Amino acid sequence: NEIIDDSRLRGQIQLAPFHPDFEFSDTRSTTTEDGEVVEDPSDYRNRAPFPAFHLLRGDEVGAALQGPNPWLAESKGRSSEVVGEAVGNRNAEFLRSRGVAACRADLEACLKAAKIACPRG
Image 1: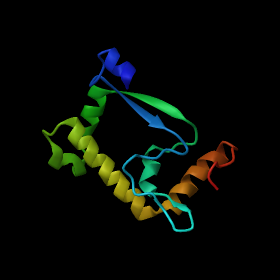
Image 2: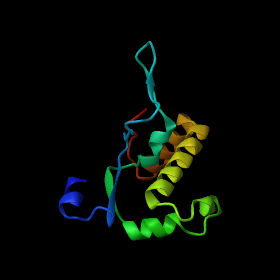
Image 3: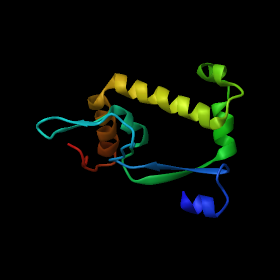
Image 4: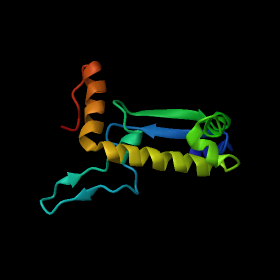
């Protein structure tokens, strides 16, 4: 993000990080009394079989967020940041409704297809 700022590209491009162990700083992961970490399924929004960065063009992200999706119709005229946050929140709730086991199974299926062992077992 510092490079994006130094290059004066903030708003023109977005950097989206993905990683097998990605965790958002504000998610609901907890630790039990036994020391076991209970993952927040919403962290799977940015999990991927391999570490990767996606460079997204801001105008294309904005166009997609303001597009014909019926769920986004109520967001017309709002900034892409506000709409993007709403989409992220919606995705987080969807993943929480699926649960960690289903999200992990999806990631493991991707890794299996690539014939690589899952780092989280």
